[in-house]
Image (cartoon, rainbow, N blue to C red; front, side):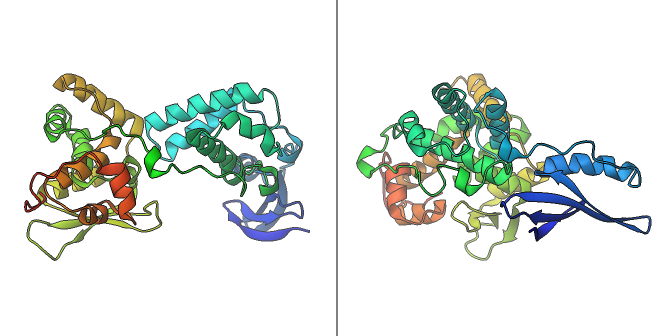
Length: 342
Protein backbone atom coordinates (compact mmCIF):
# COMPACT_ATOMS: atom_id res chain seq x y z
CA UNK A 1 0.00 0.00 0.00
CA UNK A 2 1.38 3.41 -1.02
CA UNK A 3 1.47 6.32 1.43
CA UNK A 4 1.70 9.98 0.35
CA UNK A 5 4.87 11.65 1.70
CA UNK A 6 5.34 14.81 -0.39
CA UNK A 7 5.36 16.54 -3.76
CA UNK A 8 7.73 17.13 -6.63
CA UNK A 9 7.31 19.35 -9.69
CA UNK A 10 5.50 16.57 -11.59
CA UNK A 11 3.09 15.55 -8.88
CA UNK A 12 3.27 13.37 -5.78
CA UNK A 13 5.85 11.26 -3.98
CA UNK A 14 4.58 8.12 -2.27
CA UNK A 15 6.27 5.50 -0.13
CA UNK A 16 5.58 1.87 -0.95
CA UNK A 17 5.22 -0.91 1.59
CA UNK A 18 8.81 -1.93 0.76
CA UNK A 19 9.98 1.48 2.04
CA UNK A 20 11.00 2.82 -1.35
CA UNK A 21 9.90 6.14 -2.80
CA UNK A 22 7.86 6.20 -6.00
CA UNK A 23 7.30 9.33 -8.09
CA UNK A 24 3.79 9.80 -9.51
CA UNK A 25 2.77 12.26 -12.23
CA UNK A 26 -0.31 14.13 -10.98
CA UNK A 27 -0.98 17.36 -12.94
CA UNK A 28 -3.62 19.33 -14.83
CA UNK A 29 -2.79 19.93 -18.50
CA UNK A 30 -5.12 22.09 -20.59
CA UNK A 31 -8.04 21.40 -18.28
CA UNK A 32 -7.47 17.65 -18.09
CA UNK A 33 -6.29 15.75 -15.05
CA UNK A 34 -3.47 13.24 -15.53
CA UNK A 35 -2.32 10.79 -12.89
CA UNK A 36 0.21 8.13 -13.74
CA UNK A 37 3.10 6.36 -12.04
CA UNK A 38 6.53 7.13 -13.47
CA UNK A 39 7.78 3.81 -12.11
CA UNK A 40 10.86 5.84 -11.14
CA UNK A 41 12.65 5.37 -7.85
CA UNK A 42 14.80 8.51 -7.98
CA UNK A 43 14.00 12.17 -8.65
CA UNK A 44 16.47 12.26 -11.54
CA UNK A 45 14.70 9.42 -13.33
CA UNK A 46 11.27 10.91 -12.59
CA UNK A 47 12.26 14.29 -14.03
CA UNK A 48 13.51 12.68 -17.25
CA UNK A 49 10.19 10.83 -17.63
CA UNK A 50 8.18 13.94 -16.80
CA UNK A 51 9.98 15.93 -19.52
CA UNK A 52 8.83 13.32 -22.07
CA UNK A 53 5.31 13.29 -20.64
CA UNK A 54 4.75 17.05 -20.78
CA UNK A 55 5.57 17.21 -24.52
CA UNK A 56 2.60 14.97 -25.41
CA UNK A 57 0.50 13.96 -22.37
CA UNK A 58 -2.16 12.19 -24.45
CA UNK A 59 0.31 10.07 -26.39
CA UNK A 60 2.74 9.41 -23.56
CA UNK A 61 3.47 5.78 -22.78
CA UNK A 62 6.20 4.29 -20.64
CA UNK A 63 8.33 2.10 -22.88
CA UNK A 64 9.75 0.08 -20.01
CA UNK A 65 9.97 0.63 -16.29
CA UNK A 66 13.35 1.72 -14.96
CA UNK A 67 15.08 -1.06 -13.03
CA UNK A 68 14.31 -1.24 -9.33
CA UNK A 69 17.48 -0.06 -7.52
CA UNK A 70 16.78 -2.75 -4.92
CA UNK A 71 17.58 -5.36 -7.56
CA UNK A 72 20.79 -3.76 -8.79
CA UNK A 73 24.14 -4.44 -7.07
CA UNK A 74 26.13 -1.39 -5.97
CA UNK A 75 29.84 -1.66 -6.66
CA UNK A 76 32.46 0.79 -5.46
CA UNK A 77 33.78 1.52 -8.96
CA UNK A 78 35.20 4.64 -10.61
CA UNK A 79 31.73 5.92 -11.56
CA UNK A 80 30.48 5.66 -7.98
CA UNK A 81 33.64 7.33 -6.63
CA UNK A 82 33.26 10.17 -9.12
CA UNK A 83 29.59 10.69 -8.27
CA UNK A 84 30.30 10.87 -4.54
CA UNK A 85 33.27 13.25 -4.97
CA UNK A 86 31.19 15.54 -7.21
CA UNK A 87 28.58 15.65 -4.45
CA UNK A 88 31.29 16.36 -1.87
CA UNK A 89 32.55 19.34 -3.91
CA UNK A 90 29.04 20.74 -4.37
CA UNK A 91 28.54 20.42 -0.63
CA UNK A 92 31.41 22.88 -0.16
CA UNK A 93 34.17 20.61 1.14
CA UNK A 94 37.71 21.83 0.60
CA UNK A 95 39.84 20.59 -2.26
CA UNK A 96 42.26 19.01 0.22
CA UNK A 97 39.50 17.00 1.90
CA UNK A 98 37.99 15.89 -1.42
CA UNK A 99 41.43 14.69 -2.53
CA UNK A 100 41.84 12.78 0.73
CA UNK A 101 38.37 11.28 0.31
CA UNK A 102 39.39 10.01 -3.12
CA UNK A 103 42.51 8.34 -1.70
CA UNK A 104 40.48 6.54 0.98
CA UNK A 105 37.75 5.50 -1.48
CA UNK A 106 40.26 4.01 -3.91
CA UNK A 107 41.83 2.05 -1.04
CA UNK A 108 38.38 0.75 -0.09
CA UNK A 109 37.68 -0.05 -3.74
CA UNK A 110 40.79 -2.22 -3.94
CA UNK A 111 39.83 -4.02 -0.73
CA UNK A 112 36.19 -4.64 -1.66
CA UNK A 113 36.62 -5.66 -5.27
CA UNK A 114 33.25 -6.54 -6.84
CA UNK A 115 31.37 -7.03 -3.59
CA UNK A 116 27.89 -5.49 -3.41
CA UNK A 117 27.78 -2.56 -0.97
CA UNK A 118 24.12 -3.26 -0.23
CA UNK A 119 23.79 -5.16 3.02
CA UNK A 120 27.51 -5.90 3.21
CA UNK A 121 28.35 -7.31 6.67
CA UNK A 122 30.04 -4.76 8.91
CA UNK A 123 32.69 -7.34 9.76
CA UNK A 124 33.78 -7.28 6.12
CA UNK A 125 34.29 -3.50 6.24
CA UNK A 126 36.07 -3.16 9.58
CA UNK A 127 39.41 -4.69 8.45
CA UNK A 128 39.46 -2.20 5.57
CA UNK A 129 39.15 0.88 7.78
CA UNK A 130 41.43 -0.42 10.58
CA UNK A 131 40.32 2.23 13.08
CA UNK A 132 41.43 5.06 10.76
CA UNK A 133 39.14 7.98 11.72
CA UNK A 134 39.26 9.65 8.30
CA UNK A 135 38.63 6.43 6.40
CA UNK A 136 35.70 5.59 8.69
CA UNK A 137 34.29 9.10 8.15
CA UNK A 138 34.56 8.67 4.36
CA UNK A 139 32.91 5.24 4.46
CA UNK A 140 30.01 6.55 6.57
CA UNK A 141 29.63 9.57 4.27
CA UNK A 142 29.54 7.30 1.20
CA UNK A 143 26.78 5.12 2.66
CA UNK A 144 24.87 8.17 3.87
CA UNK A 145 25.02 9.64 0.35
CA UNK A 146 23.74 6.39 -1.17
CA UNK A 147 20.93 6.30 1.38
CA UNK A 148 19.83 9.93 1.75
CA UNK A 149 20.78 11.56 -1.57
CA UNK A 150 20.75 8.78 -4.15
CA UNK A 151 18.00 6.75 -2.39
CA UNK A 152 19.65 3.52 -3.51
CA UNK A 153 19.78 2.03 -0.03
CA UNK A 154 17.39 1.62 2.86
CA UNK A 155 18.67 2.06 6.43
CA UNK A 156 18.54 -1.72 6.86
CA UNK A 157 20.88 -2.13 3.87
CA UNK A 158 23.44 0.32 5.26
CA UNK A 159 25.85 -1.65 7.48
CA UNK A 160 27.28 1.56 8.97
CA UNK A 161 23.92 3.05 9.97
CA UNK A 162 23.79 3.29 13.75
CA UNK A 163 26.64 0.80 14.16
CA UNK A 164 29.90 2.43 13.03
CA UNK A 165 31.15 5.59 14.73
CA UNK A 166 34.15 7.78 13.96
CA UNK A 167 36.69 7.38 16.80
CA UNK A 168 37.54 10.60 18.63
CA UNK A 169 41.15 11.26 19.53
CA UNK A 170 41.98 11.80 23.15
CA UNK A 171 43.73 15.06 23.95
CA UNK A 172 47.04 13.27 24.37
CA UNK A 173 46.72 11.81 20.88
CA UNK A 174 46.08 15.04 19.03
CA UNK A 175 48.48 16.14 16.35
CA UNK A 176 51.09 18.57 17.57
CA UNK A 177 51.93 20.38 14.34
CA UNK A 178 51.59 24.16 14.51
CA UNK A 179 49.08 25.14 11.83
CA UNK A 180 49.11 28.86 12.50
CA UNK A 181 50.50 31.22 9.85
CA UNK A 182 52.37 34.43 10.81
CA UNK A 183 50.28 37.54 10.21
CA UNK A 184 53.02 39.12 8.09
CA UNK A 185 52.93 36.14 5.73
CA UNK A 186 49.16 36.40 5.33
CA UNK A 187 49.42 40.14 4.63
CA UNK A 188 52.07 39.48 1.97
CA UNK A 189 49.79 36.96 0.25
CA UNK A 190 46.76 39.28 0.43
CA UNK A 191 48.77 41.92 -1.42
CA UNK A 192 49.31 39.46 -4.30
CA UNK A 193 45.67 38.46 -4.80
CA UNK A 194 42.96 39.88 -7.02
CA UNK A 195 40.12 41.79 -5.37
CA UNK A 196 37.63 38.90 -5.67
CA UNK A 197 39.82 36.33 -3.87
CA UNK A 198 41.42 38.85 -1.51
CA UNK A 199 38.05 39.60 0.09
CA UNK A 200 37.57 35.89 0.90
CA UNK A 201 40.97 35.44 2.55
CA UNK A 202 40.74 38.81 4.32
CA UNK A 203 37.42 37.79 5.84
CA UNK A 204 38.75 34.40 6.98
CA UNK A 205 41.91 35.94 8.40
CA UNK A 206 39.79 38.39 10.38
CA UNK A 207 37.09 36.03 11.65
CA UNK A 208 38.61 32.56 11.77
CA UNK A 209 35.58 30.93 10.10
CA UNK A 210 35.93 27.61 8.31
CA UNK A 211 36.06 27.60 4.51
CA UNK A 212 32.71 25.78 4.49
CA UNK A 213 31.23 28.55 6.67
CA UNK A 214 32.71 31.15 4.34
CA UNK A 215 30.98 29.38 1.45
CA UNK A 216 27.65 29.37 3.31
CA UNK A 217 28.02 33.07 4.05
CA UNK A 218 28.82 33.81 0.39
CA UNK A 219 25.72 31.90 -0.67
CA UNK A 220 23.14 32.97 1.88
CA UNK A 221 24.67 34.94 4.77
CA UNK A 222 23.85 38.50 5.74
CA UNK A 223 25.05 41.49 7.77
CA UNK A 224 23.24 43.01 10.73
CA UNK A 225 23.69 46.30 12.52
CA UNK A 226 25.91 46.34 15.60
CA UNK A 227 25.31 48.24 18.82
CA UNK A 228 28.38 48.29 20.99
CA UNK A 229 31.98 49.53 20.93
CA UNK A 230 32.74 51.81 18.02
CA UNK A 231 35.49 49.52 16.71
CA UNK A 232 32.77 47.16 15.35
CA UNK A 233 30.41 48.36 12.63
CA UNK A 234 28.35 45.27 11.74
CA UNK A 235 27.72 41.61 12.57
CA UNK A 236 28.33 38.86 10.03
CA UNK A 237 25.76 36.06 10.26
CA UNK A 238 26.73 32.62 8.92
CA UNK A 239 23.64 30.42 8.53
CA UNK A 240 23.51 26.85 9.80
CA UNK A 241 26.71 26.58 11.79
CA UNK A 242 27.79 22.95 12.13
CA UNK A 243 26.54 22.82 15.74
CA UNK A 244 23.07 23.83 14.49
CA UNK A 245 23.19 27.53 15.32
CA UNK A 246 23.73 30.68 13.31
CA UNK A 247 27.29 31.88 13.89
CA UNK A 248 27.69 35.64 14.48
CA UNK A 249 30.93 37.61 14.37
CA UNK A 250 31.34 41.35 14.92
CA UNK A 251 33.23 43.08 12.11
CA UNK A 252 35.26 46.27 12.00
CA UNK A 253 35.07 48.63 9.02
CA UNK A 254 37.70 46.76 6.98
CA UNK A 255 36.13 43.36 7.51
CA UNK A 256 32.66 44.80 6.90
CA UNK A 257 33.82 45.97 3.48
CA UNK A 258 35.31 42.54 2.71
CA UNK A 259 32.10 40.79 3.84
CA UNK A 260 29.98 42.99 1.59
CA UNK A 261 32.28 42.23 -1.35
CA UNK A 262 31.95 38.49 -0.65
CA UNK A 263 28.15 38.66 -0.55
CA UNK A 264 28.00 40.73 -3.74
CA UNK A 265 30.20 38.20 -5.58
CA UNK A 266 28.16 35.32 -4.22
CA UNK A 267 29.14 31.65 -4.21
CA UNK A 268 32.63 30.51 -5.19
CA UNK A 269 34.50 27.34 -6.08
CA UNK A 270 36.44 26.15 -3.00
CA UNK A 271 39.00 24.36 -5.19
CA UNK A 272 39.59 27.55 -7.19
CA UNK A 273 39.94 29.52 -3.96
CA UNK A 274 42.58 27.12 -2.64
CA UNK A 275 44.44 27.28 -5.93
CA UNK A 276 44.43 31.09 -5.94
CA UNK A 277 45.84 31.20 -2.39
CA UNK A 278 48.59 28.77 -3.36
CA UNK A 279 49.50 30.81 -6.45
CA UNK A 280 49.49 34.01 -4.38
CA UNK A 281 51.93 32.35 -1.94
CA UNK A 282 54.22 31.65 -4.90
CA UNK A 283 53.94 35.25 -6.10
CA UNK A 284 54.66 36.54 -2.59
CA UNK A 285 57.58 34.09 -2.30
CA UNK A 286 56.40 32.71 1.06
CA UNK A 287 55.85 29.11 2.21
CA UNK A 288 52.42 27.95 0.97
CA UNK A 289 49.43 27.60 3.26
CA UNK A 290 45.75 26.80 2.81
CA UNK A 291 42.77 28.99 3.78
CA UNK A 292 41.76 26.36 6.33
CA UNK A 293 44.75 27.33 8.47
CA UNK A 294 43.30 30.79 9.10
CA UNK A 295 41.19 29.46 11.97
CA UNK A 296 44.28 28.22 13.80
CA UNK A 297 46.08 31.43 12.94
CA UNK A 298 43.34 33.72 14.28
CA UNK A 299 43.23 31.79 17.56
CA UNK A 300 47.01 32.03 17.91
CA UNK A 301 47.08 35.74 17.08
CA UNK A 302 44.37 36.45 19.65
CA UNK A 303 46.09 34.58 22.47
CA UNK A 304 49.43 36.17 21.64
CA UNK A 305 47.72 39.56 21.78
CA UNK A 306 46.55 38.82 25.32
CA UNK A 307 43.07 37.33 24.91
CA UNK A 308 42.07 34.59 27.35
CA UNK A 309 40.92 31.20 26.05
CA UNK A 310 37.31 31.88 27.04
CA UNK A 311 37.21 34.92 24.75
CA UNK A 312 38.86 33.02 21.92
CA UNK A 313 36.45 30.10 22.38
CA UNK A 314 33.44 32.44 22.23
CA UNK A 315 34.83 34.25 19.19
CA UNK A 316 35.36 30.99 17.27
CA UNK A 317 31.94 29.62 18.27
CA UNK A 318 33.21 26.64 20.29
CA UNK A 319 31.02 25.06 22.91
CA UNK A 320 33.87 24.12 25.23
CA UNK A 321 37.29 25.49 26.11
CA UNK A 322 38.75 22.03 25.57
CA UNK A 323 38.26 22.30 21.82
CA UNK A 324 39.97 25.68 21.67
CA UNK A 325 42.84 24.58 23.88
CA UNK A 326 43.46 21.26 22.16
CA UNK A 327 43.05 22.23 18.51
CA UNK A 328 43.54 25.93 17.93
CA UNK A 329 45.63 27.77 20.51
CA UNK A 330 48.08 25.30 22.01
CA UNK A 331 51.15 26.89 20.35
CA UNK A 332 50.27 30.48 21.24
CA UNK A 333 52.48 32.34 23.74
CA UNK A 334 50.79 35.41 25.25
CA UNK A 335 53.12 38.38 25.12
CA UNK A 336 51.14 40.65 27.44
CA UNK A 337 47.74 39.72 28.87
CA UNK A 338 46.94 43.41 29.29
CA UNK A 339 46.99 44.04 25.54
CA UNK A 340 43.66 44.50 23.76
CA UNK A 341 42.86 42.13 20.91
CA UNK A 342 42.94 43.92 17.58
